[in-house]
Length: 136
Image (cartoon, rainbow, N blue to C red; front, side):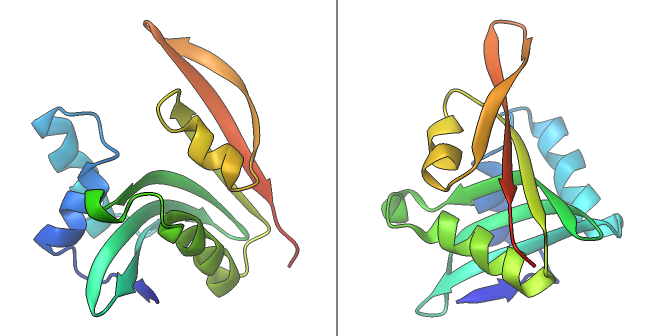
């Protein structure tokens, strides 16, 4: 079940943290942006009343950028991330979802129907732009 997350509980912050660079200061700044910036939204996929997947987005009208998405380790591979993104898109009436990611997560976006193209590398890490066009 899709839910908007008006409050970042520790459980939701931990899910988002799974997709963040493991630098405590950067994580604090990113989580604070979800609390303070009007264009940042957090959504959660709940199962049995428990959050199992969370996504943080930057929303701009009919388009949104996935900034972070993380699933509980014991729930990975069950499709909750894809269901969450599709639910968000439908709920917000989005025409496009985008994401920039690395080799660790590009397969997730490919399996979700995103078009993937190369992005400029950051240091030694390959990067990818992912785009999902949606009918409104």
